[in-house]
Structure formats: C-alpha cells, structure tokens
Image (tube, rainbow, N blue to C red):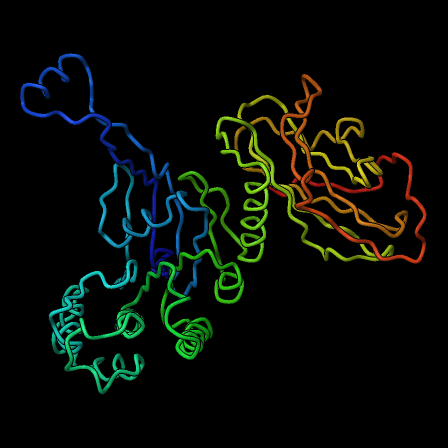
Length: 395
C-alpha cells in the first residue's frame, strides 16, 4: 500500500497573512498621494508561519493553542474558505466542516429546507441528503419542528440542528471548531457517545480545535500545539494538554508575549507528581535554540528557593547532550528520589550556552513543575548534590 493511501490530510509549509487597514484614502487622488509617498495604508499581520503536519485516516487529531495562535484560520484554510499565501493543502476524501455555528443557515427557511441547503453547500446531492435526513433529524431531536421556519427555533435548537448536520453528513473528514460545549447536558452526552464511537471504530477522521484539554485527553490519539502562528509541538495528546496548561499558567503569571527569536525551553513532568523516596522523577524537556551556538539542557531541584540537587552536562562531561542547531530537541531527565525527604519541590529546567557558560532560557520557577514527595522524614534534604540524575538526548 502506498503511504499516501493512509493520509487523510497533508499540510505542507502553509503560511497566511492578512492586511489590516491603518489609513483610509478618501478618494483616488488621496490614494495616489499615499502611493507616491510609499504609504501602504495597511499593516500586514502574519497569522500562520510555515505550518506542516499530516493527519492519518481514522485519526482523532486535536489542535490547541491560545487565542490568536492561528487555529481558526488554519481550519478555514483546510475547509477551503481561505486561500494560502504559500504552501499546499491536500485533502484525501470528502471533508465536512463545522467551523462557525449557523453559517449557511437561512432563518426564513424551514428546518427541512435548511438541511437540504446545507447539504448542497457541503457537496451532497438531494438523493444523498435523503439517505441521511432521518438520522440528522433524530440526532437533533427535532422531528416535530422540521416544517417550522428556523427563525422560530431557540438558539439551542439551532445548535442541535447545525451540529447534527455536520456529524451525520456522510463525509470522510469531520472538521470541528469549539463544538463540544454545544446544546444542553443531555445533548452533550449524546455527542460524547458519538465521539467515543468514532474513536473506537475509526469510521471517520476528525480534526478538533478546542480549549478543553479534557476533550483532547479523552478523544484524541494525536494533537498539535500552535503558538503565535507556528507549530510548537505535535504528538501525544496528554503531553500536548499538559504543555498547553503550563503555557497558560506561565502566560497568566508573566503576561508576556513569547519572543520567537529567543531560545525557548519547556518542561513537563511525565512521572507522577506525588512520589515517594523509592520512586523516580521523570521530566521531559523540550527546547529550541535561536542560533547554532553549542547549548545543552540541565536541571535542578528547588526546595524553598534553595537548589538541592543539580545535573549539569558540562560539569559531568556529557558531550552527547550538546546541540548546535535551531531544531527542536527533547531531553529525558530521570532522578531517583532516595535522598529526598518529605516536602514540595520545584523542578527547574535551564538552557546553558556552552561558550559563555550562562543560562539563556529557563522553565519551572513559577511552579509549573512542582512535585510532592511523601515521606515520614520531615527534615531538610539539604546539600547541593551533582550527578544523582540521568539525562539523555531523545531527539
């Protein structure tokens, strides 16, 4: 089988920008004057930067990111609503988008007429809509209202009808944007049952954009994190959900914008956060450098503002930990806790520039990676110990 036969969606180097007006010309003369002065009259906003990823057939693929990260723009490009500035989008199968509630609905038409109109907009013939009509109506729980005009529907009824059209349409790829909170509690339970069925039998490919990390963990088998219009991470949905939560915690505390020209580091606890002395702490460190200077990741444990145990590849002579590029790298850090007493500890990850021997990025000082060690001994762990942990460069 050709590898492409397994791919439902392929995004290659997609970029998108918008022109935001900054000065309005009152006429042709003013527009000409602005042009001669080199005044564009708009500001270019780069929304997506060189996005590349694949979604396999049967995937439940989550896309997460803070507001303004480019999620909705990406979905509209996938759905054919927006064109790209560069790159390509390949869709293998019939795609059904559910991006903005009520788009394509006409309040002066009946529910029945709106189903057929939406079906036509999605590329289905009347005969194909005939086959799925009863399933749509039954799922929406609106059989007694289909001949009433849509303007007489409550907002909840409109939500149920629009969502039912999207998920019951016989498409191969379902694109959903912030829809898991639609309808009342009973309807949400029905939607959850539907998604669990899809996840189990892989009958459809689903691309889900959401801020709900519980949904990412429950339904998705793969996920992607966007930041400032670029792909930061793709992989395990649990790890993506943790990273997204850490970023939100960091943003809320720092209220700063990530400078993409600076080296960056992110750490995630992959072991339990509540541990005992006979357990091993495991940390995943992901970093990207801003230059090709030699750098490496290191870590230490902090107790009440005091470093307790440190692992520094430079001091230990671990040359295999050094990288000299701007690629994304993953480091796994493991630390046996037999020397630790009861307490709450911060795990701090840092990037060090080998030439200057200075830290150029850090993560964990604000408590994003706190662990709790349960032990009857409450005395201080004390000391500044080196080489109790192990680190290896996974990627």
